[in-house]
Length: 365
Image 1 (cartoon, rainbow, N blue to C red):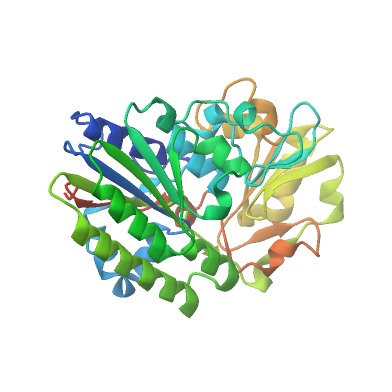
Image 2: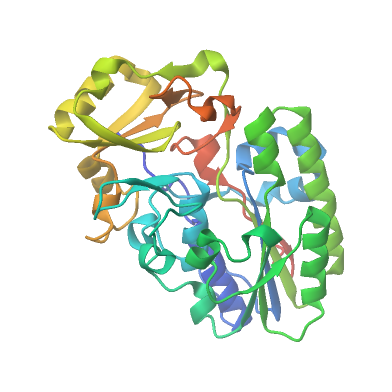
């Protein structure tokens, strides 16, 4: 039996719409009160479980954990999909960002949905209006200067005023300045430090813990700057699982018979096949058993993994999906550079799919 993609009542797709409700003086499903300024801080890679495990290093963030059961990041648990859900309020099956790498229906090639590829139109691929475009209030996105005009920014941050700031401290300083501007204002603040350290060293490393301590201190400073009608939500796009070398699974050659291309990422392969998908899926199940959830595209869509799926998004999803269980990761190429990463994500485990939604300022419970 396949696991449910949405393990919580709320998901990332609920966050910004409810902030816009609060800015308009309406109480949405999250019950947020009316505010003049709403800040959404997205800490890339901060799973709720990892925050709980390291709560002694994050007193400001952890203080909100008793009231926070977490929300669902959606599936797949990868930045391209999750951030598009955050900024459109829709699941991947609607906005079309179906993985780290996905299939381009017209050509069959595998394309990157974080970096874009030659000839890939961000507006055509991420097909929905962003909430920044339709909000009716001033929206500001604060992230790295080098991403100001990137393919991904043009896909998911359209409609927001982009403020580039190189360091975590600089980005928080920009957010604090926006709190001084006349409202209503929606601020999206993106912090990548935890994700960077997690990939390189793992979520149980001293480097990741140090990044968490830095984030916590910066959040404390931002909370102190909030006025009585200003609210802050802290969330994440996915959690992480540390994958040791012993858990690297090199795919047997016979399992690639009939497989014409591989998309996704090591924690969730998406396979394009030129044979019967059910037969391919069964062969993978027989080989890897409890180490992966294996589903055909039909089964995954029926189980709601991608949410409602539009007809023109369907061909972007693999014919067969292999979602790693526990701490495993799958590699078709033994020389895959992803094998250097310790912390990984993309699958449907609770460690990857449950992220915090912490409320501060006027949004405090």
